Length: 491
Image (cartoon, rainbow, N blue to C red; front, side):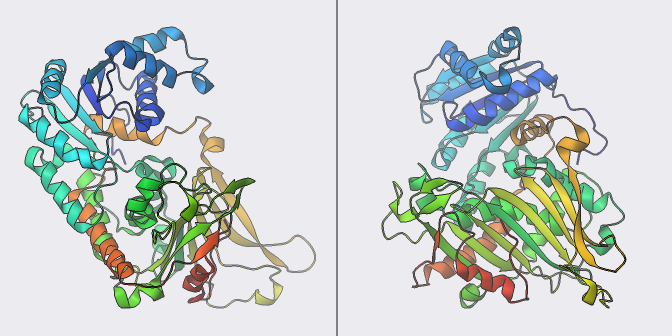
């Protein structure tokens, strides 16, 4: 996705993290910046934390050191850590205090590149955007200025449009980077290479040869301490509108003419605009939702969703979603795409399964001990790679056929550990590569489809199906794939 750009090192920059005392900074952002520093992708830079807590520069540096201690950081020389920590600064301020932004303006003034990262609750976005504009931190007269916006990006089409309008009052579209960390995963990035860089797959990537596609993003844990957040979100908003639709558009898009960011993103938008709407009358036919009940996942007892802290006892918020969607294009007409995602399931796994049609004449039907359609499985997590299921003859004097696997794993093939998603995405924003970020029209096209489903669900009086934690989801989900005589893949 980098075109001819094989090495990336941004010009001198300053990155300001709004909400720097939160979990995202601790678990992802500081480690990602430290990794870029160690690898030499970032040398001349400054990191400024901006948050309400009464920290100082020294406090932020001490906290950052704790983020980089233990585990795989243990072998890194203290001198390298110290050199990184010296690049950290901090502004203690509420998000609506203009004095804090005036202080920030003085700190970032000397730097050629300015990146603002909104790692805060979405309710704070308009306030931060407004004040950045008030003090002129959106101006590009002395270098570049960009802003990264975390998800959730709206709750429906109306709120997404409203947030886009807020952003557009202070920033141009080419300055806005709407992040989805799923696009930073190596296997997700490899989808386009797999499709368009290999002559074996692209001729087969259409309704003539593909029977159906399954996209699964399963989590074994429940909502934990995020009950209050989940009540406002639910699985459809939290996973399908962003992560899963990103996977789907890369799988289904037409070949781009080149690898320029807007060329790739325009093809993704076309997929979303080609989705066949699921209206109220189709809700029961093409969607299934559910809530996990008490159970055991991977040996750990899990409370039911309605028993979790912060969850209303009569909640109708879904923790599981299964969809059958159709893309009305020449390439994909007649190919169902099955989507399944949820919490409290039997295993944590993210994968895509592309199932090919049977040969026109099945001459080995009577010789197959197990048989099966050819499948290409893209493993996204926990392992990264792909598996190709083909049928082969069992050694011996008779012709007996069974499926075998051809496997590729990133770790085995390339040795080095793959970069963390945030590491890759932050670097892309620093060099101005927006390929892996979501454009305004893409956000609004995805919300157009999702909002229709949400409106249909709101009119549905039936209670949500319950499924035992540790299972593969509600029984009702089986009907979606059974409609074409298929089954969900085992988790």
